[in-house]
Image (cartoon, rainbow, N blue to C red):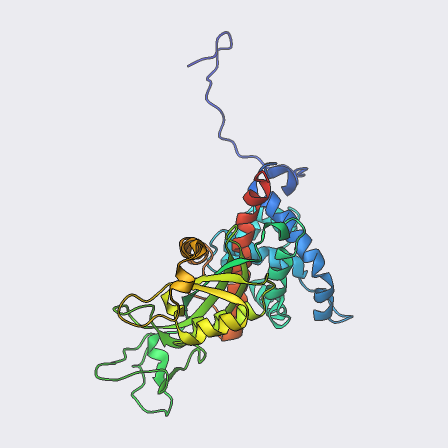
Length: 369
């Protein structure tokens, strides 16, 4: 094919050329309406409020470290885009201009070594920065009006630990060790294992647990959240060892520390339908809208609670809390943690819950009042 009047082929050239100088910034490459722009504004405002806390984590003199603001933005990107490891994250930052823009790196800025990045992340862990950042996002003047102080929901989920079942060994040192090799065989036939007699050699804080009957038991942690019912934003989060009462114990702790209106309500599933939990909520001035047991077990609530229309509303809306765990496990990397120890797993869980809120906030803020 030839262009009319030109006499040469229309096919473009495949020559690959490079220029000595580039005048394009990462800012210019991001579309004006890209969702991360609104998220970055919220993140930067929260980080500004934490500046004093960051100052307390670093010595007055010495070589410059990675800026904590850049480090936290990078960790948020890891949750937003399902980057499976910090090593892969550093690789992405090397050539991904969107990542560089969000973090605050120029086109030619060197990317940190992954070991240095991990060491600096541990510094933020000691300062409980994840919990402070989570609270700083909710304290934003634009976000606070979105939050309900009257109606809440609570639930928990299991987070698979980064430990093999072969590491779950008797505490007294008995039992045959795994076979030789990188992934040696281990025969569990006929051996009764429980958290009272066994513990993981790899991650002692992990506990053997299962979500329901008929499912396989795994070494896990338990992540818990409280959601406000108006817009489905998480207002409290914590991580515990996976015990039989972990969900109820965490629910009591989170509701006790929550800023709420008098006579607020709390929706929950059947696991919270116990006399102890219901009594604890009523002592806090919270009406427990827990799902009633229907399998012959006596419920801790009766018609005085279930007859009100608000109970049915709480039971319908509380199911939205599963969206938090669904996003966290499918996108945010919470299905199986890559960290060990309750403190580190809890830090990671809280940061990913904050990331979930940030994902939802741009649309909520843009919606008409």
